Length: 236
View 1 (cartoon, rainbow, N blue to C red):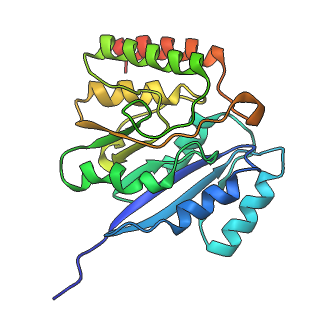
View 2 (tube, helix red, strand yellow):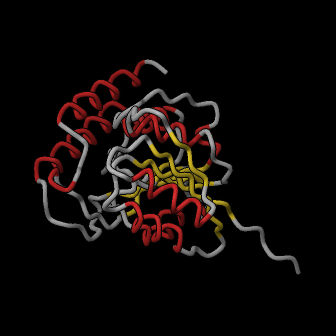
């Protein structure tokens, strides 16, 4: 009897100034075993200024992972878009390198797709998973943006801004993404919802950093997200 073919999971990891967390995050991702799944890791290093690039070079040399080195830091969205150009897997997962999101959640994130229930899975920070208690106003902003998404696109998401988005490769075929910064999350969500793909949410563990620990998203990014949601409601 032949061995069933394993699913290939492409993990896109945008990296910028994550010297304190990158190595541990990579180790967790690299060592995470998922039944029936092989992994490819695509690191996109956006010209860090804190020594992260040197760590990425060392890790890639030791483990043979794929790395895209960008000459300029153009933002998370730009890095994710570059990573998506290099995927070869059946399923794609976006993994930030700051350890806010836990790779131990991979099996639950993949399960709805593997069972044929979903095309896209969002890891929701607001469905009862364990989380660090911090940053009230950041949580409020996330919930308001999600509420606006639900109104504009007639859906019932609980966490539009989550960094854990997992999807079948064909979901993004023929879709052009233009975001360069944190507006990738609302752009991706808007374009997926308009194409009527099946989205599931699952609870995830969340350990948010505060700004003293290097968190990068700022208030102006919330306004950019609002504009992105409105814009893509009416244009492609």
